[in-house]
Length: 342
Image 1 (cartoon, helix red, strand yellow):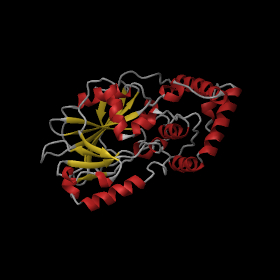
Image 2 (cartoon, helix red, strand yellow):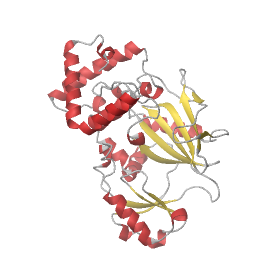
Image 3 (tube, helix red, strand yellow):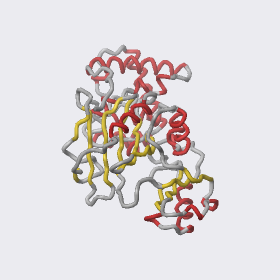
Image 4 (spheres, helix red, strand yellow):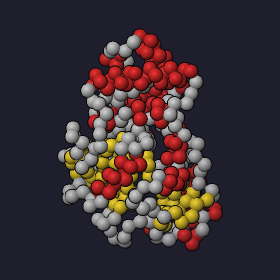
């Protein structure tokens, strides 16, 4: 661990954090090895018991912060109920037409060009009937594969593993002939630090990335987001402010969540809430504590620390971690950022 993280920290707290790092390594050795490999490739030495960089915080979330709310938000259907229970003024979500436990029970009458078939426990399990066809046997085969997949196990995304698996059909949003874009808003306890726009139909794939500056205003970067090859031309969505408002509101009780939207040239729809972006990493220097997303993510807002529930060993660790984070915050001069966004 870099010595700078221990600067000014009492010896007792140092010992607790070193013991916690060993516990994390024993509990998730494969994740720890992969983390070390990626960190060293970026020129950093990780320390996950006192996470300061974004990718360290993802591993801490996977191994340490077992907040039951993470299971709810990882479940595409349960997350809808949670969103509705917040009583917020938000963009609409695509309508769910049917849900069930087996592909065989899916009503064939629903397999129209306006249908989207999904499962609730993974990412990427999507069948667009208009593009992918309405063959019931093909759809059943795809669903069977999705339902048999322990999504998240390879990357340690434990929130997905406890979800009761279900199949559901959504009504496709948008207008025929008008392209939809993906908007991904990176929110941190009510603050916005990054927005990514992706035009999935462009070739080569084009997109935009916005990042909050020192004043909290979002600025368009001159480089495309990591999943795109070129910068998309043109102004942002006319509904961007609405997306930012929704992401701030939905993230107030969470240390970090990515709020996804679909938007065309006129309308916007609320999509998924993502807790493990890209399997648990930030594009670029995810192991740099000074990177904007690393600094924006304050795990003192995490459920594990705001609502501690554990034995004596956990309480000792939580106190040592909180003192170390407070000290690191003061040393870095970051402070707790206010509202970010235009």
